[in-house]
Image (cartoon, rainbow, N blue to C red; front, side, top):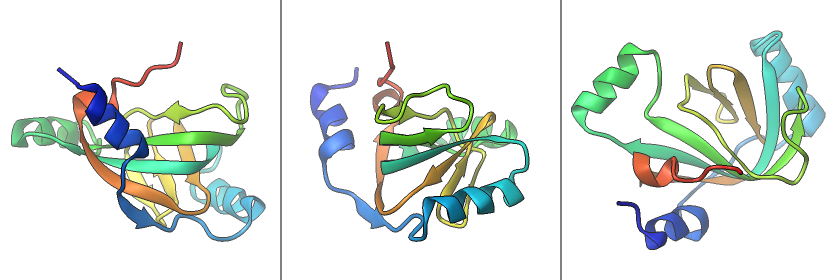
Length: 134
């Protein structure tokens, strides 16, 4: 069972600082369009890249599906290319497929563009996926 303390530490506790994209939002979007043509994107800030603590069996299952044992949480959406999310809302991704250039976290349907500095933390699958909108 996931505790309130685990979730609180994940959202507001300390972590390892990670730089993300340090240029302009427009430059980041342009780079993503070249690297992931036609794929939906979501520009986020105040983000947390979550490395999931998994068992070897869980890691193997994820790897066999082409997934990383990682997800992304962002306190603030800046822009969603498909209009799925409103600016200022928070978002939590599904499992990642790739993490590119230190600022692009790809899932099956979306590339999350990490604007500015964020954090990298570890958490259980239960804690990371306990956050649901609605």
